[in-house]
Amino acid sequence: MRIDVLTLFPGMFEGFLEEGIVRVARSKGLLDVVTHDFRAFATDKHRSVDDRPYGGGPGMVLMCGPVFACDESVVAAGRAAGQEGEPKRIMLTPQGRRLDQDLLEELHQEPWLSVLCGHYEGFDERIREGLEPLEVSIGDYVLSGGEVPAMVLIDGITRLLPGALGHPDGARSDSFACGPLLEGPQYTRPRVFRDMEVPAVLLSGDHGAVARWRHEQAELRTQARRPDLLGRADENEHTSQ
Ligand code: SAM
Image (cartoon, rainbow, N blue to C red; front, side):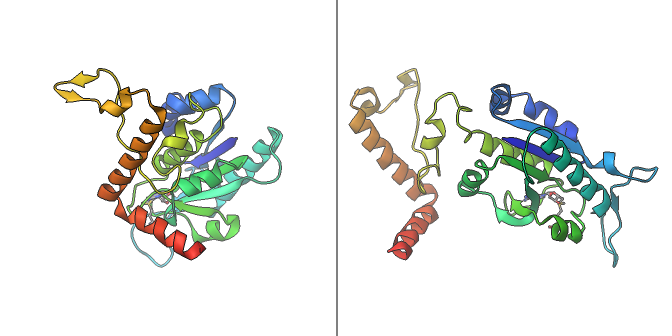
C-alpha cells in the first residue's frame, strides 16, 4: 500500500515513520509512506501557501495553487512508482466523516491513499470541489493541524495490513474488531502481583472456558463503559430482520 501525505510540516512524520508498527510495515515492504511539502509548490518569492479569507475574519486559509500543484505532483510520482489511476484522496477536517474501525477496514483495502493535512483556518473550499476528497475527522474537537490526525489514520490502517502485526490474529481480538464489543481484561506474568491474582480460568488450560470467559468479560466491560455500542448492535439486528 502507498500513502502520500501532503503537509506543511513533513518533519513531524520523521519519528513516526521510524518507530513501531509503521517502521515494521515499511521494512517488510507492506507500506510506503511519502511526505510532500505544500510549500515546495508555492510560486511567489515568500513561498506563500496561505492568505487572508475573502470577506474578512480571523486566521489564514490554505490556497488552491500550492495544494493542486502538490496533488498533481503526487499523482505523477505515484504513477512513476507503479501505481495505477488516481489515489483515493482524503482530506483531514473536523467536518468530515468520523473515523472509526469500519472506515479503517474500508481504507486499508485501498492500494493508494493521498492524505491532505490542513492548517490555519483550513482549506480554500475549491480544494474540496476540485479534488473531491473523502473528508475524515478523528473526533469532535479541533486540532491545529492535520498531521496528528494523519498519523492516527496511518497507524490504524497499518495494523490491519496482513503481515504487519506479529500475530496474524492480533488485530482481530481488539475492541471494535468483531462487532461492537470492547476487548476484555488481559493479564501477563506474574500470576500474583501485590495480592492481585490472575483469574483462575486463564490458568486452567481449558480453551473453551477461556473463550467463554473472555466473551462474557467483553460484554460486561462494554455494558459498563459503552452501553451505546450494545444499543447500536441491537438496532442493526432489528433493521436487518
Ligand atoms: N476552521 C476549521 C473548521 O472550523 O472546520 C478548522 C481548522 S483546524 C484549526 C486546522 C486543520 O487541522 C484542519 O484543516 C484539519 O486538517 C486539521 N484538524 C483539526 N481538527 C481535526 C479533526 N478533529 N479531525 C481531522 N483533522 C483535524
